[in-house]
Length: 102
Image (cartoon, rainbow, N blue to C red; front, side):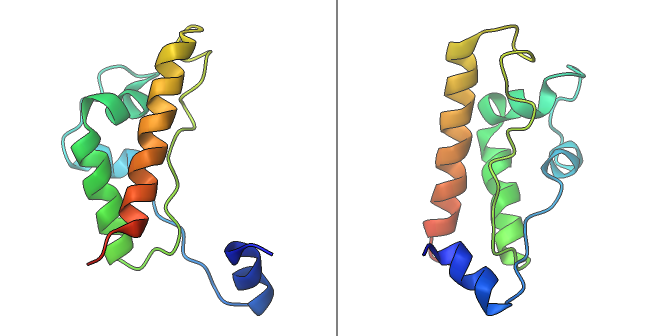
C-alpha cells in the first residue's frame, strides 16, 4: 500500500495546493497567450512555478500537483517534444519542492 492510500485509509485530511494559474498572474507571468500561458510558464518562468509551490507548502499543502492540465498535444499543436519537455520539467520541480528541507 502506498503512502497516499495509507493516509486516505486513516481518515486524515489532505490539503492540496491551490490555483497555480491565479498565483502566476499575481506574480506577473505573461498571460498574453490565452490558450497556453499557464503551460508555457513552466518553461518561461520556472522560478515562479517553484516559488508558488514553495508558498503552497509553507501554507500547509500536503500535496503539490504539477499543474499540467493545459500541457497536451492539442494545445501545442502536436508538438510532442515540447509537451514532453514541459511535463518533465514541471514534474521535476514539483518533486523537488516536496523533498526540500525548510
